[in-house]
Image 1 (cartoon, each protein chain N blue to C red):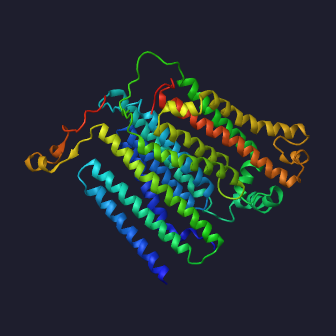
Image 2 (image 1 turned 90 degrees about the horizontal axis):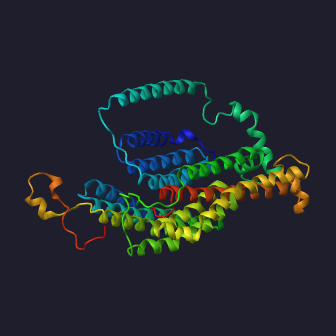
Image 3 (image 1 turned 135 degrees about the vertical axis):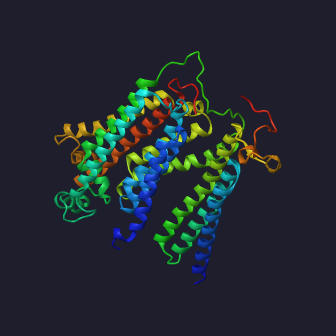
Length: 129
Length: 343
């Protein structure tokens, strides 16, 4: 019974984070924040979903379910490493190609719409090439 | 539990719709990189469909080959190609319209032909009546292999699989003949290649923790093909992907020092030769080509187990070839053929 509630709770939280991820990808203003939303939200919600599935499996405890739960745990481990790494790589590549990022101050001054609010001039370090 | 496909027809329609959207988007996008990614998404959607149809072996192969490796190889290639859509060129418009007309005619013909196809999983269809029941009933008793797909693939239809491996080998050969060249003075133009010395710590750490697991998993998939979905093709692709991941997270040179071009080519040919060699050994022992039962005396087991071991041996051959071919394709395509510098 308590396990059931935990499963439902994990699944619902996962779903909530998925919705937040989707909203973030659509609504955030620039490349970096969108990738950030996708990376963070996806990792956590997938973990929660699979965690819920593991708990659901372990309701009827046995060798079979334990094996399946172990495999799911490996998938969780893999996603937990691979997904943030991929996000990091994408953002790093975007940074090196000087993908413009969003700033508030420019947006307030600009009258020409969203395109102008993308800052393309300022970087803290001079990159090679 | 019996599986009723009509349970999830909404799911089917949703996935099909998304596949059509992906296909149209891949054609409409101007950037080749974006098209490659969308093609990968398309492959993942097909995986869902096949899993839903309980064709898990096929879905596994599609996930490994279509969605993962092909996308990476497309990305590696796309950095050398830029697609410019030149508008208002007189000859091209006509050819484009002609292509559309031909495509529409073909589509209409094929859609017309689907009416004659049997329903999905129709027990009265010729395919389910004639040969399949025999395989399903006999496979375990004749080859001691619970996974019927593997038994059919590597035993009953082993000629087919052998020449599939040869086709894969030929693909690597053709890419090599077309692209391979010695390094040249003029530097390649790599628009999309970031210079990222000394900033790969995160990637390298992740690669170090994932690659060993990946390689063990690939061997597991290869060897466990008798009992679960998997086999030579999937295992080989995953093993090859581990070297490609190494090349992506470090660089091409690092990966090539671990797995040199020479060794890659030996593996390419060696896998196919192992497969054909086992067939020839069976022929030499007085059975048919690839009749694994001939190996029973040699291995000291029953004919049934000999067929099981034969399946494993040819799967290992397929795995070696596929692994080496994937690595070879990546080396050639990602470096533009001179194996000097690349994605």
